[in-house]
Image (cartoon, rainbow, N blue to C red; front, side, top):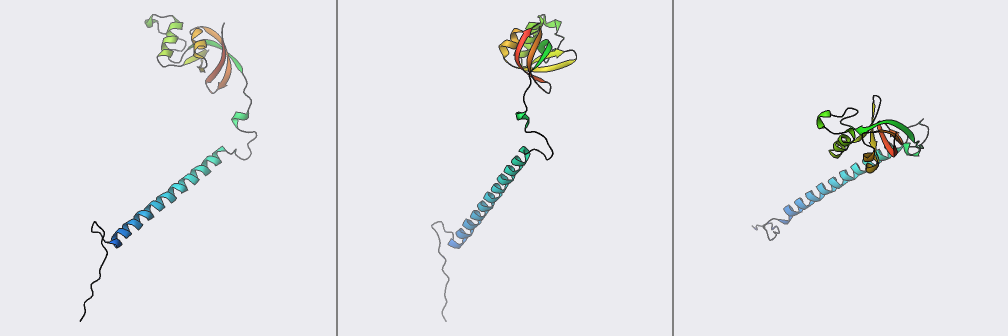
Length: 154
């Protein structure tokens, strides 16, 4: 009777080549699946972005950026978003100084016109020069924000 022993190749670390091949194939399969899922997400994201840019059916005109912007004129008190039209007398500062101090502290310039308060964007030196005074501002209105192109004291 003859006994045949099956010999398996071993690597220098003592792991059989069939076991090493199994792990190599498993890791390659997992990496391939991860790449396929990433590609799927990229394609879906690109499709969603393209769909968001298309105008809805029945909509007239193009995107809002193609609509001509119209300059408007606004009058009121140039102040800041914290104080509004009522500056704190406890600070002991004039309205202009109070406005500049609040803006320096992180508040934004604002225009008070009656009960309406508009946030003002524009050239800071131009706005600081008219802070705390009645002004006429030319600019474009977007919601409650005015992008000022000019400021004149009235």
